[in-house]
Image (cartoon, rainbow, N blue to C red; front, side, top):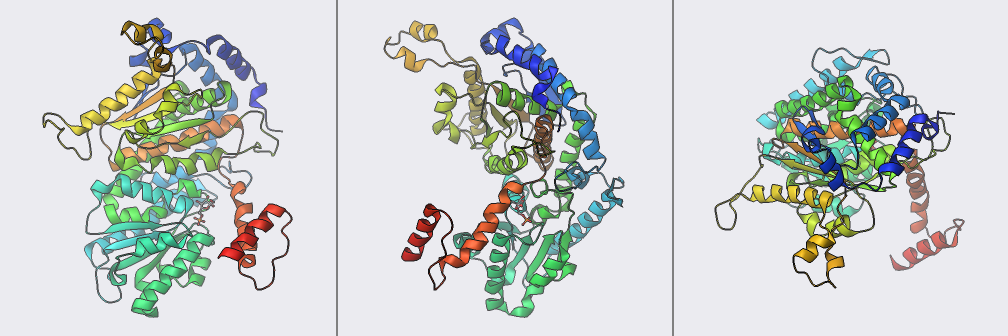
Length: 545
Ligand code: F6P
């Protein structure tokens, strides 16, 4: 049996401590410890992370760090960095940190120099994207490539599309990108709309090169291209990103046009591998290098900073604090940056596919909840949709607010005297303030409010938030943000004793979809599937399709 974290002295101390402080209010905590707003801050590279508006005292933080020590967070982190097989259910190393090591760093994984392998692929990606961007690589008819279409799903889509959108200011060289993921034909059809096959390059991105959605879309895209330009055009219009050269070749893509990665990179940890080829094609190899350097700076911080000042450790511990001691189910991620609109969706796979587990690494059942539910929308849109529940609802939803000092775009305000970005950021500051400190019945009554309305206007406050601020949304800062969350996932998973790097829970649905597909169209009546609901759903579909 893995050791049960809930049976440790560190856990018991936290439980007792929780009973003592659960009713404490952030107003009191700030009154007692007026410097906390200046001191409960951690800096990791460009990220200034304010965790003062959490329902913790300095004692809580000490106890949480003790929990991390008890769970062996530092030892397991070091084992991950050393390339040990900490993904035990798949017997694999977990080495995404190797994807952003500095050139010349040697890092042994499974007897190979992962650092050297990574830089070899990065250099091949750089040469290829340089040739695309300079117009040296041309389509079959001699046209320049102006659109890359990434076909992939899950980690082979969410990372690239999020980063591409976030870094739209860095997109240049006349190449833009589109992303196709869903097996719903509406996705591919809409994304091909208006494209000229002669100037379009498809990147088929799939770690396994066996994913139904991706291979189905890739086949349809190939048909679209061949119908327009003929079979010989495929070599100039299709490249692949995969760990599986055999399947790439079987699909008909020349492996000379394949960019590889390794089984020690999990799909949801792969945006900084060759899976980021579409991003490199659109922003260039230097900017992509800055993105990797940003990730590396947080890796260094995570690897070397003492636990009580270590940003991913502290934020992961706070996730555990709310999930397991306050019973919180979810965490909102609220970027005050429209360019980060897809960041919450990206984090959903990163965090939920990693930590949505019910058994510990040795197969024994967990004894506490795992896996925060991540969700969110960019501010200020969320304010006009779901913040009502954050402010006055009955559920406790910790929230991460992300904002920048300098905007990627700015426009004057209505009267022409101010900046729209200042308005955006004033909303971030106001929301974190109101969520923490609320407004009491006495304060509302003192404003002369009708007594009947007072209870409706009370803002309970005491809603925890983290404010993550950075100077500007650059490639490096985006890389830092991603690594910050990657390592939080690791910290939480280690405390829960689970394997954050497998995803067996997605397999059965895929397998059964393959088994059910022929029944939807078979000439004979389909065999019963073992439950009346599935039989009736399939029957209805056959009658109405
Ligand atoms: O959803 C399951 C999953 O295996 C993810 O972990 C992965 O990112 C996605 O499918 C796509 O897999 P592939 O890159 O192998 O096509």
